[in-house]
Length: 330
Image 1: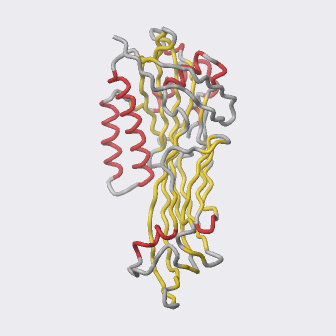
Image 2 (image 1 turned 30 degrees about the horizontal axis):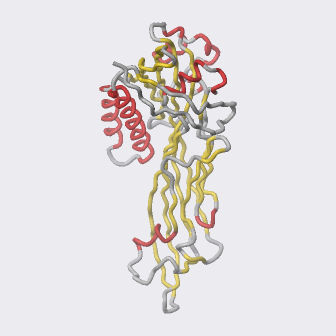
Image 3 (image 1 turned 90 degrees about the vertical axis):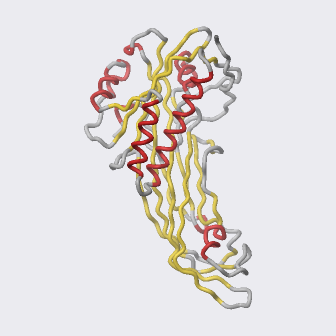
């Protein structure tokens, strides 16, 4: 029995990078199965997000955790592909033949998942996700950078940001996801035992070293009508997500005590994570609509992540690679 899933009303006005994308506000989607299909897709998405966090944080035992998450995905029907399997996949889709030269290195993890449960206007469609993730080896989907910043004046700790992130999707700010917004007070308060240290306390001579690492995950969505062969698939929609962390070390800074004396604080450290997804990331309904409507648009990308530190100085500006075809990923 069909159960109508009305969770994908597209009321979007986001401008996507490098493509003209038009959305209607009255799209309603059905899933031709029970809620288990939707719940399985949601769980797969959650595991991919967790894999990205584990990669970016690289805590002790992260490789074992990644293997555990891979097994979880495989139990849900996700296949992890070899380079030869990816190359075979790309050759089967004729319209992107000029771009199918796949990398010969082993720094990208490829996986695939199929969902044949999409229905639009009475027609059943299968969406195949081909997902590219960086692994522990260097690739164009990951990077790390360290920078040191020095304060130029004194200021109250509650009024100054210590680290702040902002992400863009084309010209639009991404207001969802997990960002970082941390004041200097919140960054240092746990390292100070002085009960009179408040948000109004003035600090000076702050030098901070920031290290930012990030991982981009790209999802290529192929669509065909249920019953068609893979050679009839069309690469319809591409999305990405950006996950990372910023860590810092403040070797030493000074603050003014309530009695007028100056106190020094040494070796303040910390870490915060960020996670931004493009609109429609891993959402098969976007791929199906793009398949049936050429005016819908072909991709949705996080195009920039800006990280600023003390005194609004730039820590890092991340410009994701935003690959539109799998053959370019390396």
